[in-house]
Image (cartoon, rainbow, N blue to C red; front, side, top):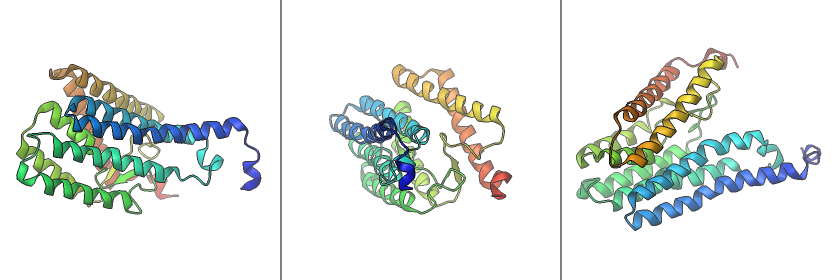
Length: 250
């Protein structure tokens, strides 16, 4: 391993450190998100949450492109990723739920947030949180996206409380959820993989538009958004009960 490290050029190290720095920026943006929530600038906070999702969605791909584990073997990128993800996918949405008025019943809000933080801690710490075939095991703590939809649609406090409670329970149910940036074992078809990537990109663009268009709700964009969610859940259930045979053979 030491001999292999000597073969790398200075540009390899610069690129590897740059990817880690790019990931770490997500922590600072998470801090800014908390500030915006505290200042009750909720839409701006949601925009910042979206930026952290974007960073998280591409930093893994960048890391693999620069062979980051080989170039910097003493830096645990997975640990860094989990620390930042827990901040941005759990802590900031929970703070949002506690601070924003009329999003949760006041008498239950603290208990729901406790349930989210504890169940999410389990999700992040379990050994098989991400399966060998690159799926999330149990609900993957997309609390920031849930908060986004609750804000956009101004859903009732009772409805929000029920949805959040159900998602907490689903963390402990071993359904395999798609990891959108790692679809190696979703299908053998390159065309279907390309279609999935295009669908994910389209979903991201539509979500951005819904944020820009708020408080208006474009029906066409909403349909695309919900169709992607339905597709995501369907494919997750399908691959839970019918894993790709090529993986079984390995």
